[in-house]
Length: 266
Image (cartoon, rainbow, N blue to C red; front, side, top):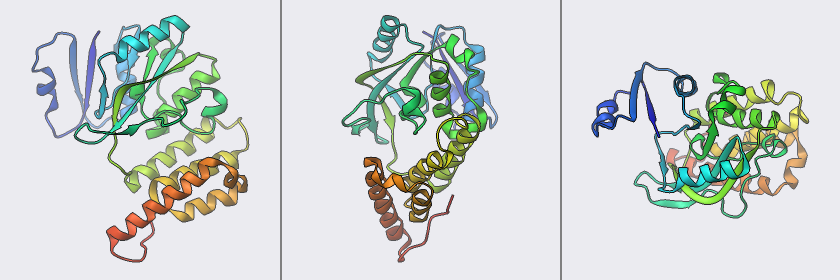
């Protein structure tokens, strides 16, 4: 196993720390302010390994993670294998399981409705499959992992899921409004460039707005989602999104110390 660590313009001198154990399997490359997806594509171009795992700084792999995913990949001849895990806090304490009740379905029908995974770090992929789909689309920004899984599904590349907790994904308990806006912009990019031939565009857009509302507490965005697709109200996910919107709106009002300073709209 080899580790390629690409450090993107951070002021924290992490390179020497990573290199300090002196493991020849670890290579560190420092870059100036490239996008995360640009770095991932550079890593894809530089590696010669059969399988790849694109980890983020907050990801933690449990001891049997790679071994378990590889076994399923070979058993099912899959192009990619995702696995479950825990959402963890800054100290590594478990907040909850990623999937409380049902494992995700990595089918085109399901992925058209939204990203079924939490992070790029929970999917082991074959290098040949990554190159076949052209790697990460940098235009999709923070939603590029969703765009990648859609491309896999569109090409009929089989994806499997291991319903076990094999990793930890660091979760800060909320999303910065700017990050949420960037995620919405990425999802809208995917609707135009990757999903433009699938389903009702207003319905797909409404789901993106619903997710944005739940992330930010923006009731105006939730209202626009309903206006575009009234049928959203019949979905169990809508009730959950409405509750999350209300909770985050209340938290924002408490932080601002006023009756309501609206979040920046999409």
